[in-house]
Image (cartoon, rainbow, N blue to C red):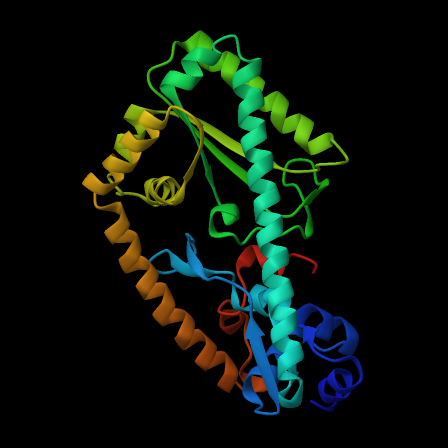
Length: 299
């Protein structure tokens, strides 16, 4: 604790990531000291939202994880530094909003290029809905460099998650659209200015109806993505039809119940972790602190 007190006294409020780097403390123990002690104040800029995880009982958990929220979105300070902590939080929120806005604009421009470069542009405009999902729609996008899964190359933070729903396109047209979208994906990845990862899927409106049955983990994830998704381009009529189908299947209510469960379990996890003695820290216990994927990441 003395290391943290000394750091804050000398350098002022710190993010969790800065604090860990400067003190050399283990992330979990740094988090615990900051949370438990009344000598520190902690404020967070993050918005928590539902994420579905196959490794979690009931599939529901909150994002960001406790660890990521502490490292990337939490500012720690002394009580006398409260105004400075609040100022840093405002700056952090503006930064997150700016990143999210830039990524949203990039996704919108990408969709415009896809439509313009397609020989079936009119068909895309009339019978395809382009939908953005992921961190961006929650205004929680980040630009932390991370390795892209297929190539290992570093990309700039949150993916651009694009869903393209089409209304019974011919096979030839689908192949052409896939080629054009893939070209955009490749261009965004290799361009040193953007270095963005575009994840996309093209699906038929009939398959959407099947996924809204919410009867498997895969269908739950697909339904959640469509529920959260925002309109980017193409047919607004088809986009609105999808949103009506989501209402008809009660997807919003189902996800709301899952999120309430995740909120309760997050509060319980924080309580358990904050009370755990060093001798009680196990791999199972730490699964409450971070996700399986985050365990392997370097911050």
